[in-house]
Image (cartoon, rainbow, N blue to C red; front, top):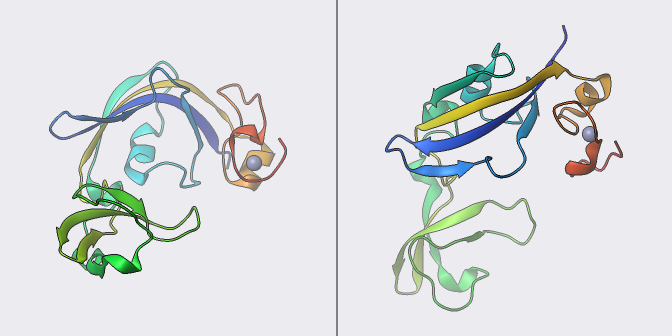
Amino acid sequence: MSRNVVTFHYTLRDTRGQVIDASLGGDPVSFLEGAGQIVEGLEEGLRGLAAGTRATIGVPAAKAYGEHDPEQVQRVLRSLLPIEGEVKPGDQFRAGSDQFAPIVTVVKVEGEELLLDANHPLAGVDLEFEVEVLGVREATKEECEHGHAHGDARGEGGCGNHDCGCKG
Ligand code: ZN
């Protein structure tokens, strides 16, 4: 079965209408179907939409960044953390030295202890994507092998915009 690469622009809002993120003004997003490149509920909503379609796709938290897990909220001694200077609720930092370490959010400062939330910042948040589909094309064999889309809506440009290490 062939897979598609879909290219789209989006504006992401929470259910109160607050804009969280948007691709307008920047490059559109391309993804390979079935590769887990975008959140599950958004991929489901985009399935079958033709180029030129505008749509609003509601995605419940469970199909976006997951429900908020209370066990991911923990008290940690500040001295154990790689932070300097003043810390206040809402601050975010990486809980480790490598670039894939999870990002944690400071919920509360209690003396020498911090209450940290390691959930994704959008966990538990229902999302609404306003999308415009710019292009739908068949994925190349190379894209299917790599598990991600290459280049733009026409498939031009290789892996240059990925960190996968392959030369497109
Ligand atoms: Zn690649």
